[in-house]
Length: 169
Image (cartoon, rainbow, N blue to C red; front, top):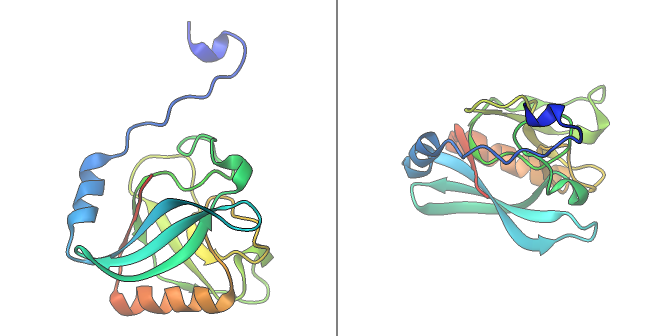
């Protein structure tokens, strides 16, 4: 009998990282973004993640960011849409930055939204890089503290031509 039919819902373990694709993205000489968790936390308790622009093994630029919320860090990062968990580990395709306007969602800020689409199967989606306006974390996107920082990251991603994001654990 299947576990979900036995009563209490059970958390399923994270599926393995799509290692071959992640290795290719990590070893490319193309400019790319990498997101890695740190042990540091901000005043609201959000874990700080290093968002790095890299080319090959060279670090070009590093910014502090958040993904998810403090109370969602242990939730299923792969298969539970809407749970506000951090981005699942793996490789993502970076889309063209979208200029935001006053009619857009407040939580995305008023500067830029950079879409990032997983290159692996997951029911979670609508990820991106944007300003964390309320500074209370994100619903799974990569949040940046302030408009100026968001504009800086957008400018670097565009000028470098970064096409991939690698999220590490």
